Every structure is written in C-alpha cells, then in structure tokens.
Length: 284
Image 1 (spheres, rainbow, N blue to C red):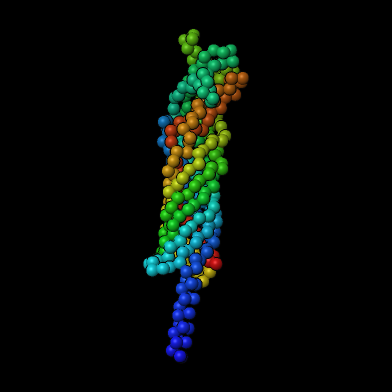
Image 2 (spheres, rainbow, N blue to C red; image 1 turned 135 degrees about the vertical axis):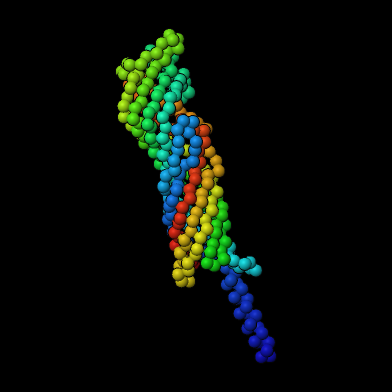
C-alpha cells in the first residue's frame, strides 16, 4: 500500500514536471544595433558608397517546450525601425527629353526641346527609414544562439540632399537644329554650386535576416544578447519607375531642379546591413 502511494506520488510529480516543462516561455525584449546599414545599387554614371545606420525596436520570442530536442527552439517576431543611408558621387553628361510624367519635353512656346546637362562633382546623400517586422526561428545551445528568417520592411521616409560644383545646361531644338547655350533666363548656361533636396519613394521589401551571438543569463528572468546581424533585401526597391534626372520647369525655366540619382540613374536597389546588436530579454 505504501509502495503504491509512493509510486503514485512519483508519477504525479513527474506528470506535473512534464506539464510545466511543456509550457512555452514568453520572452519580451528591447534591442538596438548599428553598423554598415545602406542601400545597394549600381549607377549608370558614377559610384555609390555605403554609410552607417542602425536599428532599434521591440521583440517577442515564444520559446517552445523541450521534448527530446537538443538545444532550445523559439519563434521570434516584433517591430522595429531601420535606418539605411548611402552616398552617391558622379560626374556625367546626359540628355533629358521627357517630363517626369513621360511626356515629350517642350518649352513654354510649345517647341520640342532636349536639355543637354553636364554635371561636375555631384555628391548626393540618401537617408531612408523603414518599419521592420521580423519572423525568425531561434535556436540556442547555451550560451550561444542563432536566428534565421525574414523581415518585412515598409518604407516610411526617403530623403536626399545633393550638391554640385558646377552644372551646365544647353537647350537643343531638333526642329530648328539649333542649340542655345547662354540664355540663363531660359535655364541655359553655367550654374555654379547648385544644391537640391527632396523625397524619393521606395517599395516594400522582404529581407533575408541572420542574427547570431552570445546569450548572457543575468537571472531567471533577465538575459542579455550580444550578437552580429546581417540583413539582405531580396527585391527591387525602386519599383521600376524612373524620373528624369533634370527636372525642367516649363513656366520658370531658370528655376529648374534635379531628382535623386536613386530615382533616375539606377535600375535596381536593395537593402544591405551588417552590424552588431544588443538585446535585453525579460522572460515571463
């Protein structure tokens, strides 16, 4: 009788322990990281260079029960802000024969026009902000861990600012076979030291994401993650829509502007980021 009671107690304790072990652990976290965080693209004229950026946000991990599995498995998601920047430099000659809406370029008297632009020492800085939503699998063999999955990136901000040492415009009228070069009131001639800034629009992106590093368990509820991360955009951000680099103002030709090289001189762009990250987790 006593043996039966003892056996029943042991079985009951074992079942309760198994049930407790079978309950998932919920971990909430806050993170911040930074490094080379940029837009990757090739210019038809000039060069692009990467720039520093980073990310920060909130995370949630559902750590799954251990049932004969070596290591700890979890599913990670959350919401965050990613900052991606780039710099473009170019010197080029180009022709503009279309308005931004695709119509044939004409002057204020209705004559067909081709703008021939020579650009010297053009520098452009691009800054973007994305709302990132990750969905990743996490695997841990203490004290190391790794995560692999995807991030959905929704563009929130796309801005650029540019400077050029010199910009020269010529207006060619094909119906007259004539070129105007010095009429500054019409936007032709040499214009030193021009600056421009504005917005550009990017598409939603899907990124392949990798995060791996060290997990330091502070106590039963708090953990510190130290890791390296890599994000790579899988699709084209530019939507395949291209604006003319030179933006002709038909009502005020001398008041012209330029568009971002990201909108006019590249066929494809994607996100590339590599850096280090700190994450503080709170288990519940």
